[in-house]
Image (tube, rainbow over all chains, first blue to last red):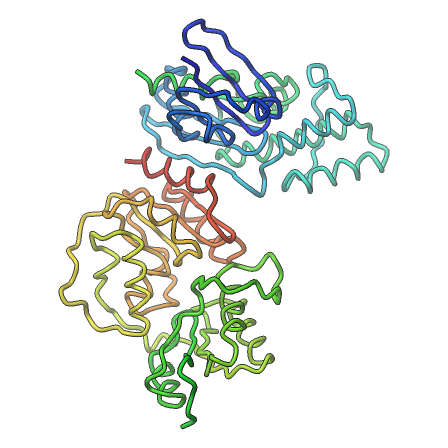
Length: 216
Length: 249
Protein backbone atom coordinates (compact mmCIF):
# COMPACT_ATOMS: atom_id res chain seq x y z
CA UNK A 1 0.00 0.00 0.00
CA UNK A 2 1.33 3.44 -0.92
CA UNK A 3 0.50 6.70 0.78
CA UNK A 4 1.65 10.11 -0.43
CA UNK A 5 2.01 13.78 0.43
CA UNK A 6 1.87 15.45 -2.97
CA UNK A 7 3.03 19.00 -2.37
CA UNK A 8 3.19 21.81 -4.90
CA UNK A 9 6.92 21.39 -5.54
CA UNK A 10 7.88 18.03 -3.98
CA UNK A 11 5.96 14.82 -3.38
CA UNK A 12 6.75 12.30 -0.68
CA UNK A 13 5.62 8.75 -1.38
CA UNK A 14 5.82 6.00 1.21
CA UNK A 15 5.42 2.29 0.45
CA UNK A 16 4.01 0.93 3.69
CA UNK A 17 4.84 -2.66 2.75
CA UNK A 18 8.54 -2.13 2.05
CA UNK A 19 9.04 1.05 4.05
CA UNK A 20 10.66 2.69 1.01
CA UNK A 21 10.34 6.47 0.89
CA UNK A 22 10.55 8.26 -2.44
CA UNK A 23 10.86 12.03 -2.66
CA UNK A 24 10.21 13.27 -6.15
CA UNK A 25 9.79 16.71 -7.68
CA UNK A 26 6.08 17.21 -8.30
CA UNK A 27 6.88 18.30 -11.87
CA UNK A 28 7.99 14.66 -12.27
CA UNK A 29 4.95 13.25 -10.53
CA UNK A 30 2.48 15.05 -12.78
CA UNK A 31 3.94 13.09 -15.71
CA UNK A 32 3.14 9.79 -13.98
CA UNK A 33 -0.44 9.85 -15.09
CA UNK A 34 -1.39 6.40 -13.82
CA UNK A 35 0.21 6.53 -10.37
CA UNK A 36 -2.36 6.10 -7.59
CA UNK A 37 -2.24 5.95 -3.79
CA UNK A 38 -4.48 4.48 -1.13
CA UNK A 39 -4.42 7.62 0.99
CA UNK A 40 -2.89 10.97 0.11
CA UNK A 41 -2.78 14.64 1.00
CA UNK A 42 -1.42 17.78 -0.62
CA UNK A 43 -2.33 20.18 -3.39
CA UNK A 44 -1.49 17.73 -6.15
CA UNK A 45 -3.03 14.59 -4.61
CA UNK A 46 -6.64 15.00 -5.64
CA UNK A 47 -7.57 12.54 -8.35
CA UNK A 48 -4.61 10.31 -7.48
CA UNK A 49 -5.92 8.57 -4.39
CA UNK A 50 -8.73 6.42 -3.04
CA UNK A 51 -8.96 8.57 0.11
CA UNK A 52 -7.96 12.24 0.26
CA UNK A 53 -6.99 13.75 3.62
CA UNK A 54 -6.90 17.40 4.58
CA UNK A 55 -3.30 18.70 4.83
CA UNK A 56 -3.75 20.59 8.05
CA UNK A 57 -5.37 17.60 9.71
CA UNK A 58 -2.51 15.38 8.46
CA UNK A 59 -0.01 17.87 9.88
CA UNK A 60 -1.70 17.95 13.30
CA UNK A 61 -1.94 14.17 13.44
CA UNK A 62 1.65 13.81 12.25
CA UNK A 63 2.79 16.16 15.01
CA UNK A 64 0.92 14.15 17.60
CA UNK A 65 2.56 10.97 16.28
CA UNK A 66 6.10 12.39 16.39
CA UNK A 67 6.10 14.77 19.36
CA UNK A 68 5.57 13.64 22.94
CA UNK A 69 5.15 17.14 24.43
CA UNK A 70 1.76 18.16 25.73
CA UNK A 71 2.02 21.72 24.45
CA UNK A 72 3.83 22.55 21.24
CA UNK A 73 3.83 24.57 18.01
CA UNK A 74 4.39 22.87 14.67
CA UNK A 75 4.81 24.62 11.34
CA UNK A 76 5.15 23.20 7.87
CA UNK A 77 6.83 25.58 5.45
CA UNK A 78 6.13 24.45 1.94
CA UNK A 79 6.77 25.63 -1.57
CA UNK A 80 3.40 27.31 -1.81
CA UNK A 81 2.07 27.81 1.70
CA UNK A 82 2.69 27.74 5.43
CA UNK A 83 0.62 25.48 7.67
CA UNK A 84 0.59 25.89 11.42
CA UNK A 85 -0.90 24.13 14.43
CA UNK A 86 -0.45 24.91 18.10
CA UNK A 87 -1.43 22.21 20.57
CA UNK A 88 -2.19 22.60 24.22
CA UNK A 89 -2.66 19.47 26.29
CA UNK A 90 -2.33 17.62 22.95
CA UNK A 91 -5.51 19.32 21.68
CA UNK A 92 -5.46 21.80 18.82
CA UNK A 93 -5.61 25.26 20.32
CA UNK A 94 -4.81 27.33 17.24
CA UNK A 95 -4.29 26.61 13.58
CA UNK A 96 -3.72 28.63 10.46
CA UNK A 97 -2.84 28.19 6.84
CA UNK A 98 -1.21 30.99 4.91
CA UNK A 99 -2.43 30.46 1.40
CA UNK A 100 -1.89 33.38 -0.90
CA UNK A 101 -0.13 36.68 -0.08
CA UNK A 102 2.93 35.75 1.98
CA UNK A 103 3.14 32.27 0.56
CA UNK A 104 4.76 30.87 -2.60
CA UNK A 105 7.98 31.82 -0.92
CA UNK A 106 9.54 28.33 -0.66
CA UNK A 107 9.14 27.85 -4.40
CA UNK A 108 10.53 31.34 -5.01
CA UNK A 109 13.58 30.59 -2.87
CA UNK A 110 14.27 27.48 -4.90
CA UNK A 111 13.96 29.43 -8.14
CA UNK A 112 16.37 32.06 -6.84
CA UNK A 113 18.78 29.40 -5.59
CA UNK A 114 18.81 27.64 -8.91
CA UNK A 115 19.27 30.85 -10.85
CA UNK A 116 22.21 32.05 -8.74
CA UNK A 117 23.69 28.55 -8.15
CA UNK A 118 23.29 28.83 -4.39
CA UNK A 119 24.32 25.84 -2.26
CA UNK A 120 21.94 26.10 0.70
CA UNK A 121 23.92 23.51 2.67
CA UNK A 122 26.82 25.97 2.98
CA UNK A 123 25.02 29.32 2.67
CA UNK A 124 25.78 31.42 5.78
CA UNK A 125 22.83 33.15 7.45
CA UNK A 126 22.57 36.90 7.02
CA UNK A 127 22.05 39.44 9.80
CA UNK A 128 20.15 41.55 7.32
CA UNK A 129 16.77 40.78 5.79
CA UNK A 130 14.47 42.00 3.05
CA UNK A 131 10.71 42.33 3.33
CA UNK A 132 9.15 39.23 1.76
CA UNK A 133 5.55 40.37 1.40
CA UNK A 134 5.12 37.59 -1.13
CA UNK A 135 7.34 35.64 -3.48
CA UNK A 136 7.16 38.25 -6.22
CA UNK A 137 7.81 41.27 -3.99
CA UNK A 138 10.60 39.35 -2.23
CA UNK A 139 12.27 38.50 -5.53
CA UNK A 140 12.14 42.16 -6.54
CA UNK A 141 13.99 43.02 -3.30
CA UNK A 142 16.66 40.41 -4.05
CA UNK A 143 17.19 41.82 -7.52
CA UNK A 144 17.38 45.31 -6.02
CA UNK A 145 20.01 44.20 -3.48
CA UNK A 146 22.10 42.62 -6.22
CA UNK A 147 21.87 45.78 -8.31
CA UNK A 148 23.15 47.71 -5.26
CA UNK A 149 26.23 45.49 -5.09
CA UNK A 150 25.22 42.91 -2.49
CA UNK A 151 26.40 39.44 -3.48
CA UNK A 152 23.78 36.99 -4.78
CA UNK A 153 24.53 34.70 -1.80
CA UNK A 154 23.98 37.47 0.75
CA UNK A 155 20.88 38.71 -1.11
CA UNK A 156 19.30 35.25 -1.15
CA UNK A 157 20.19 34.76 2.54
CA UNK A 158 18.43 38.08 3.21
CA UNK A 159 15.36 36.81 1.35
CA UNK A 160 15.50 33.66 3.47
CA UNK A 161 15.79 35.78 6.61
CA UNK A 162 12.68 37.73 5.55
CA UNK A 163 10.85 34.45 4.99
CA UNK A 164 11.90 33.21 8.45
CA UNK A 165 10.56 36.41 10.05
CA UNK A 166 7.23 35.91 8.24
CA UNK A 167 7.00 32.34 9.49
CA UNK A 168 7.79 33.28 13.09
CA UNK A 169 5.29 36.16 13.06
CA UNK A 170 2.70 33.90 11.45
CA UNK A 171 2.96 31.32 14.24
CA UNK A 172 2.80 33.89 17.02
CA UNK A 173 6.52 34.18 17.95
CA UNK A 174 6.79 31.10 20.19
CA UNK A 175 9.89 30.33 22.26
CA UNK A 176 10.22 27.01 20.48
CA UNK A 177 8.67 25.32 17.46
CA UNK A 178 8.87 22.08 15.53
CA UNK A 179 9.58 22.46 11.83
CA UNK A 180 8.15 20.25 9.09
CA UNK A 181 8.95 20.19 5.40
CA UNK A 182 11.86 20.68 3.03
CA UNK A 183 13.31 23.57 5.01
CA UNK A 184 14.37 21.05 7.68
CA UNK A 185 17.17 20.23 5.24
CA UNK A 186 18.15 23.85 4.75
CA UNK A 187 20.70 24.77 7.47
CA UNK A 188 20.60 28.44 6.55
CA UNK A 189 16.84 28.50 7.26
CA UNK A 190 17.22 26.64 10.57
CA UNK A 191 20.18 28.76 11.74
CA UNK A 192 18.36 31.94 10.79
CA UNK A 193 15.25 30.83 12.69
CA UNK A 194 17.37 30.02 15.73
CA UNK A 195 18.25 33.70 15.97
CA UNK A 196 14.67 34.16 17.19
CA UNK A 197 13.75 30.95 19.02
CA UNK A 198 14.58 27.28 19.45
CA UNK A 199 13.82 25.11 16.44
CA UNK A 200 13.45 21.33 16.22
CA UNK A 201 13.35 20.01 12.65
CA UNK A 202 11.11 16.95 12.21
CA UNK A 203 11.89 16.29 8.57
CA UNK A 204 9.84 16.01 5.42
CA UNK A 205 7.54 13.14 6.36
CA UNK A 206 5.40 14.65 9.10
CA UNK A 207 2.26 14.65 6.95
CA UNK A 208 2.94 11.03 5.96
CA UNK A 209 3.08 10.17 9.67
CA UNK A 210 -0.29 11.88 10.02
CA UNK A 211 -1.70 9.81 7.16
CA UNK A 212 -0.35 6.64 8.78
CA UNK A 213 -1.98 7.58 12.07
CA UNK A 214 -5.28 8.03 10.24
CA UNK A 215 -5.03 4.45 9.00
CA UNK A 216 -4.80 3.00 12.52
CA UNK B 1 -44.99 58.12 -11.08
CA UNK B 2 -43.17 56.97 -14.21
CA UNK B 3 -44.36 53.69 -15.78
CA UNK B 4 -41.55 51.15 -15.88
CA UNK B 5 -41.01 48.14 -18.15
CA UNK B 6 -41.82 44.77 -16.61
CA UNK B 7 -38.23 43.84 -15.70
CA UNK B 8 -37.51 47.04 -13.76
CA UNK B 9 -36.10 46.71 -10.25
CA UNK B 10 -34.79 48.89 -7.44
CA UNK B 11 -31.27 47.98 -6.38
CA UNK B 12 -29.76 48.50 -2.96
CA UNK B 13 -26.54 47.64 -1.23
CA UNK B 14 -25.46 47.34 2.39
CA UNK B 15 -28.21 47.98 4.94
CA UNK B 16 -29.95 51.22 3.98
CA UNK B 17 -32.26 52.99 6.39
CA UNK B 18 -35.70 51.41 6.24
CA UNK B 19 -37.27 54.87 5.80
CA UNK B 20 -35.18 55.54 2.69
CA UNK B 21 -35.98 52.15 1.19
CA UNK B 22 -39.66 52.84 1.79
CA UNK B 23 -39.52 56.35 0.29
CA UNK B 24 -37.62 55.09 -2.74
CA UNK B 25 -40.26 52.47 -3.40
CA UNK B 26 -43.01 55.06 -3.04
CA UNK B 27 -41.16 57.34 -5.48
CA UNK B 28 -40.15 54.80 -8.12
CA UNK B 29 -42.85 52.15 -7.80
CA UNK B 30 -44.15 50.28 -4.74
CA UNK B 31 -44.42 47.07 -6.75
CA UNK B 32 -40.88 47.11 -8.09
CA UNK B 33 -38.79 44.25 -6.67
CA UNK B 34 -35.87 45.17 -4.43
CA UNK B 35 -32.61 43.55 -5.50
CA UNK B 36 -29.53 43.26 -3.27
CA UNK B 37 -26.66 44.38 -5.50
CA UNK B 38 -24.01 43.03 -3.10
CA UNK B 39 -24.83 39.48 -4.14
CA UNK B 40 -23.07 37.61 -6.94
CA UNK B 41 -25.65 37.45 -9.75
CA UNK B 42 -23.24 36.27 -12.42
CA UNK B 43 -22.88 39.73 -13.94
CA UNK B 44 -19.94 40.12 -16.33
CA UNK B 45 -16.84 41.84 -14.96
CA UNK B 46 -17.22 45.52 -15.88
CA UNK B 47 -13.53 46.29 -15.33
CA UNK B 48 -14.52 49.65 -13.82
CA UNK B 49 -12.80 49.01 -10.49
CA UNK B 50 -9.22 47.88 -9.79
CA UNK B 51 -8.62 44.14 -9.46
CA UNK B 52 -7.76 44.70 -5.79
CA UNK B 53 -11.30 45.76 -4.91
CA UNK B 54 -13.35 43.88 -2.35
CA UNK B 55 -15.50 41.50 -4.40
CA UNK B 56 -18.72 42.67 -2.75
CA UNK B 57 -18.21 46.27 -3.89
CA UNK B 58 -17.21 45.01 -7.33
CA UNK B 59 -20.47 43.02 -7.40
CA UNK B 60 -22.41 46.23 -6.70
CA UNK B 61 -20.90 48.00 -9.70
CA UNK B 62 -20.97 44.96 -12.01
CA UNK B 63 -24.58 44.16 -11.13
CA UNK B 64 -25.69 47.75 -11.64
CA UNK B 65 -24.03 47.96 -15.05
CA UNK B 66 -25.42 44.59 -16.04
CA UNK B 67 -28.96 45.59 -15.05
CA UNK B 68 -28.51 48.94 -16.84
CA UNK B 69 -31.81 50.61 -17.69
CA UNK B 70 -33.72 47.95 -15.75
CA UNK B 71 -32.40 49.59 -12.60
CA UNK B 72 -34.87 52.34 -11.65
CA UNK B 73 -32.72 53.48 -8.71
CA UNK B 74 -29.92 52.41 -6.40
CA UNK B 75 -30.29 52.87 -2.66
CA UNK B 76 -26.69 53.04 -1.49
CA UNK B 77 -25.43 52.56 2.06
CA UNK B 78 -22.56 55.04 2.21
CA UNK B 79 -22.13 55.72 5.92
CA UNK B 80 -20.17 54.02 8.68
CA UNK B 81 -22.51 51.09 8.19
CA UNK B 82 -20.79 50.36 4.85
CA UNK B 83 -17.32 51.53 3.83
CA UNK B 84 -15.38 54.09 1.80
CA UNK B 85 -15.42 51.86 -1.22
CA UNK B 86 -19.20 51.52 -1.03
CA UNK B 87 -19.42 55.31 -0.90
CA UNK B 88 -17.10 55.57 -3.90
CA UNK B 89 -19.18 52.99 -5.79
CA UNK B 90 -22.27 55.11 -5.17
CA UNK B 91 -20.43 58.19 -6.47
CA UNK B 92 -19.26 56.35 -9.60
CA UNK B 93 -22.72 54.93 -10.32
CA UNK B 94 -24.21 58.42 -10.11
CA UNK B 95 -21.52 59.70 -12.48
CA UNK B 96 -22.49 56.90 -14.86
CA UNK B 97 -26.08 58.12 -14.91
CA UNK B 98 -27.83 55.94 -12.34
CA UNK B 99 -30.34 57.41 -9.91
CA UNK B 100 -28.54 56.96 -6.62
CA UNK B 101 -30.14 57.64 -3.24
CA UNK B 102 -27.60 57.70 -0.43
CA UNK B 103 -28.28 56.28 3.01
CA UNK B 104 -26.35 56.77 6.23
CA UNK B 105 -27.77 54.65 9.03
CA UNK B 106 -27.80 56.83 12.16
CA UNK B 107 -27.34 55.51 15.68
CA UNK B 108 -30.73 57.00 16.64
CA UNK B 109 -32.37 54.50 14.32
CA UNK B 110 -30.62 51.47 15.81
CA UNK B 111 -33.08 48.72 16.65
CA UNK B 112 -32.75 45.87 19.12
CA UNK B 113 -34.35 43.07 17.20
CA UNK B 114 -34.12 39.53 18.58
CA UNK B 115 -31.35 37.36 17.14
CA UNK B 116 -33.65 34.64 15.85
CA UNK B 117 -31.60 33.43 12.91
CA UNK B 118 -28.11 34.18 14.26
CA UNK B 119 -28.73 31.63 17.03
CA UNK B 120 -30.93 29.20 15.11
CA UNK B 121 -30.26 25.56 14.29
CA UNK B 122 -30.34 25.88 10.52
CA UNK B 123 -27.89 25.43 7.65
CA UNK B 124 -25.57 28.45 7.79
CA UNK B 125 -26.31 29.36 4.18
CA UNK B 126 -30.05 29.58 4.93
CA UNK B 127 -29.42 31.47 8.17
CA UNK B 128 -27.44 34.18 6.39
CA UNK B 129 -29.90 34.38 3.51
CA UNK B 130 -32.77 34.89 5.90
CA UNK B 131 -30.89 37.48 7.95
CA UNK B 132 -30.11 39.50 4.83
CA UNK B 133 -33.76 39.26 3.76
CA UNK B 134 -34.69 41.16 6.94
CA UNK B 135 -33.21 44.32 5.39
CA UNK B 136 -36.27 44.42 3.14
CA UNK B 137 -38.78 42.54 5.29
CA UNK B 138 -38.04 42.71 9.02
CA UNK B 139 -41.25 40.96 10.09
CA UNK B 140 -40.74 38.19 12.64
CA UNK B 141 -40.59 34.67 11.15
CA UNK B 142 -43.60 32.52 11.87
CA UNK B 143 -42.84 29.92 12.97
CA UNK B 144 -39.48 30.97 14.36
CA UNK B 145 -36.71 28.42 13.84
CA UNK B 146 -35.49 26.54 16.91
CA UNK B 147 -32.45 28.04 18.61
CA UNK B 148 -29.43 25.99 19.65
CA UNK B 149 -26.29 26.13 21.73
CA UNK B 150 -23.37 27.09 19.48
CA UNK B 151 -20.63 24.61 18.60
CA UNK B 152 -18.95 26.98 16.11
CA UNK B 153 -19.09 30.60 15.09
CA UNK B 154 -19.12 32.41 11.76
CA UNK B 155 -18.15 36.08 12.04
CA UNK B 156 -18.31 38.47 9.14
CA UNK B 157 -20.29 39.61 6.16
CA UNK B 158 -22.18 37.35 3.75
CA UNK B 159 -19.46 35.97 1.47
CA UNK B 160 -19.31 36.41 -2.27
CA UNK B 161 -19.12 32.63 -2.66
CA UNK B 162 -21.59 30.89 -0.34
CA UNK B 163 -19.93 27.46 -0.74
CA UNK B 164 -17.75 28.23 2.27
CA UNK B 165 -20.89 28.23 4.44
CA UNK B 166 -21.71 24.63 3.61
CA UNK B 167 -18.72 23.43 5.67
CA UNK B 168 -20.22 24.59 8.96
CA UNK B 169 -22.59 22.55 11.13
CA UNK B 170 -26.16 23.75 11.70
CA UNK B 171 -25.16 24.63 15.26
CA UNK B 172 -22.97 27.51 14.03
CA UNK B 173 -23.96 30.89 15.42
CA UNK B 174 -23.62 34.05 13.31
CA UNK B 175 -21.59 37.02 14.57
CA UNK B 176 -20.12 40.22 13.21
CA UNK B 177 -21.78 42.54 10.73
CA UNK B 178 -24.35 39.93 9.72
CA UNK B 179 -25.52 39.70 13.34
CA UNK B 180 -25.67 43.51 13.42
CA UNK B 181 -27.99 43.37 10.40
CA UNK B 182 -30.36 41.00 12.18
CA UNK B 183 -30.30 43.22 15.26
CA UNK B 184 -30.99 46.29 13.08
CA UNK B 185 -27.72 48.01 14.09
CA UNK B 186 -25.48 47.92 11.00
CA UNK B 187 -22.71 50.23 12.28
CA UNK B 188 -22.59 49.07 15.90
CA UNK B 189 -18.91 48.11 16.13
CA UNK B 190 -19.28 46.98 19.75
CA UNK B 191 -21.91 44.45 18.74
CA UNK B 192 -19.93 43.57 15.62
CA UNK B 193 -16.92 42.59 17.74
CA UNK B 194 -18.85 40.64 20.37
CA UNK B 195 -18.21 36.90 20.16
CA UNK B 196 -18.49 33.92 22.50
CA UNK B 197 -14.97 33.35 23.74
CA UNK B 198 -15.38 29.61 24.20
CA UNK B 199 -16.77 29.01 20.70
CA UNK B 200 -14.30 28.26 17.89
CA UNK B 201 -15.00 30.95 15.35
CA UNK B 202 -14.02 31.65 11.76
CA UNK B 203 -13.51 35.37 11.16
CA UNK B 204 -14.36 35.78 7.51
CA UNK B 205 -13.78 38.76 5.26
CA UNK B 206 -13.46 39.33 1.58
CA UNK B 207 -9.86 40.13 0.64
CA UNK B 208 -9.17 43.87 0.38
CA UNK B 209 -11.99 44.66 2.83
CA UNK B 210 -11.18 46.97 5.75
CA UNK B 211 -12.93 44.51 8.07
CA UNK B 212 -9.78 42.39 7.79
CA UNK B 213 -8.36 44.64 10.54
CA UNK B 214 -11.08 43.54 12.94
CA UNK B 215 -10.97 39.91 11.79
CA UNK B 216 -7.24 39.54 12.42
CA UNK B 217 -7.43 41.23 15.81
CA UNK B 218 -10.40 39.16 16.94
CA UNK B 219 -9.00 35.89 15.59
CA UNK B 220 -5.83 36.40 17.63
CA UNK B 221 -7.68 37.47 20.75
CA UNK B 222 -10.22 34.62 20.66
CA UNK B 223 -7.98 31.90 19.18
CA UNK B 224 -10.17 31.81 16.11
CA UNK B 225 -9.18 31.63 12.50
CA UNK B 226 -9.10 34.61 10.13
CA UNK B 227 -10.04 33.64 6.60
CA UNK B 228 -10.12 35.97 3.64
CA UNK B 229 -10.99 35.19 0.10
CA UNK B 230 -10.93 37.11 -3.16
CA UNK B 231 -13.58 36.21 -5.71
CA UNK B 232 -14.41 32.49 -5.66
CA UNK B 233 -13.45 30.15 -2.83
CA UNK B 234 -10.68 27.73 -3.80
CA UNK B 235 -9.88 24.24 -2.56
CA UNK B 236 -7.18 25.53 -0.19
CA UNK B 237 -9.58 27.86 1.60
CA UNK B 238 -12.20 25.15 1.85
CA UNK B 239 -9.56 22.79 3.27
CA UNK B 240 -8.45 25.39 5.82
CA UNK B 241 -12.02 25.93 7.04
CA UNK B 242 -12.73 22.20 7.02
CA UNK B 243 -9.65 21.56 9.17
CA UNK B 244 -10.62 24.28 11.66
CA UNK B 245 -14.21 23.06 11.96
CA UNK B 246 -13.05 19.49 12.50
CA UNK B 247 -10.00 20.04 14.71
CA UNK B 248 -11.61 22.62 16.97
CA UNK B 249 -14.53 20.43 18.02
